[in-house]
Image (cartoon, rainbow, N blue to C red):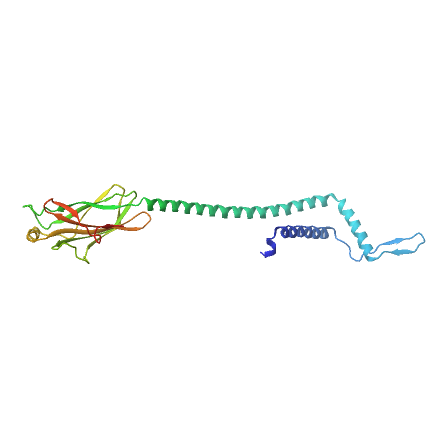
Length: 273
């Protein structure tokens, strides 16, 4: 559409001009105006007086208007034509309004959905899941037991202590026979991918066993050395309902005197984010 048609007043004038043109064309086609018609009036003295062509056209126009005005069918047809034109114009505006209303409704629905999604994302971010590792224990026997059969592994529980669903995607573990006070760097973890991810609701827990294992004789032999510690180190990768990946790391040393697994103060392996 041309830019000048965007002005409301110009549009109304254009519609009125179109209406006048349609009515005039219909009248001309229905009744017709003779071209080149001349009128003659006879004077009292017998001489003929011919009006000019402009006067002839004017007289013809008046006569035709009188004929048309006295014809009831003309007015009926004119009213019908007017009603048709008004109905057409109203239909166009109603269709346009309906389209605008549909666009506005669609936009409003989209904005509402975005607001709901944003509120949901903010809720999940502020009420995130949080995995913690606890209750490590020997699986297959204890190092001091006389009834050990086969290798010994470490089992541990991990709990969702957060406020929303956690999806565990990967677990990495390693048993380290530590003969010095600090942990080595660049540990090669035994990685277990969880596919499909394990869903853990808030307050629920799961259980995992290390891939790595050790035998009783090796543990007893190493225990005779000074500063020896058996360490279970690992990490858990999980995501929240927004798909944001999070990770928790743990590093626990077995204390032979208390028979407990104690956290090591090493932020490289004991962390959460």
